Length: 240
Image 1: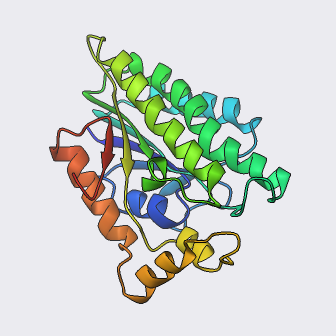
Image 2: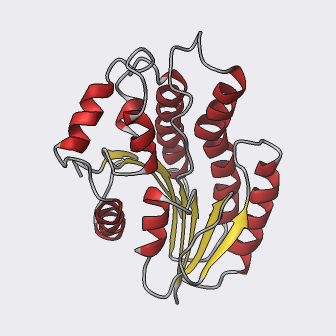
């Protein structure tokens, strides 16, 4: 019995909240640079914007999944950044490259490794969850790398979910957009100059009016839907 819950980017924001609200008694693992401040959470140190980390993390997660004897394994690929914000032809090239790698490529590469580890695992519940965004569907000038990465994540999920549907024991694969949440990413957005992000006032207004969702509320709701809902491969939590 029991669950293994792995969350990338679990040191803050939605990732931290997902670990905090994981099923009771779960073995919890945070994959991040800085580590989680939650008690009894194992930390796997990695900079997922560096492709050299991907095979190392993939191998370690494969090892941990294979060694786990419980009845549920849930891996959440949550790590991401919004920076750099600005026109694609004007932002720092190195920062832009890190954004593309972390937000777009890392979830696909790690996701493939996790799926390979989960396919033969005997757990009754095997889940790969990717954290998406409304930016996957709406082009925000200044967010080109982030928007493109989230759109790629959603379509990767649709494709892999279709592949899994052909299996006798499919792994559940879902991409979930949590809405606009009060995280450090939102603080970064609000601090952006309008010349770099013309729609910044919308996000400042959401904050001023108290319309940002609380990370703990979002995490608790996401776990409830994973436990009880038949979710489409790509889902907006606000509509679920």
